[in-house]
Amino acid sequence: MSPVHFAVLAVIPTIVLDQLSKQAVMILLDDFGSRRVVVLPDFFNLVEVWNTGVSFGMLGGFGLPPWVLTAISLLICAGLAWWLWRGAARLPATGIGLVIGGAIGNVVDRLRWGGVFDFADFHVGAWHWPAFNVADAAIVIGVGLLLLDSVFLERRRSA
Image (cartoon, rainbow, N blue to C red):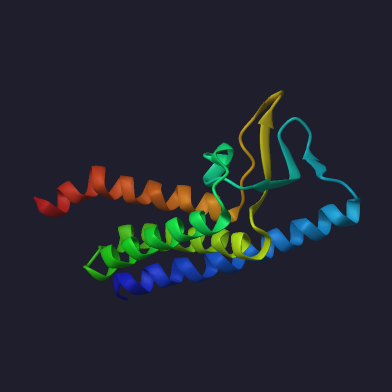
């Protein structure tokens, strides 16, 4: 399988899983009539958070319209696709696919609702990680794979 296949095998399931999980959590929260459902006390909740910034709510205070963030996301996807077509190896291709899939998952939300639906709320006591979704997790994992490849594996391929 070519690296492009690895990327496509990451993009499509990421988008589908992201959108299905968001829909399922929205239905669950609606059924409970709440914006928060405690799943594991003192560790994990399902919440309703509408993110109008970028990942993990960054830049939310700047009041950028959804179309600007959508355009930026699509430009980043285009740059990553260009990198992929130039001949990325399998691991970075998978990382690129996860980032593109996550970005597109969040773009779908911006186009549908004007913001991104985040729902995973991990916490220890009063300390909360910013709420996120499957798309955000895919982006973080994808960037991690790209860093892993560039820091550790690129040197081996060059040697």
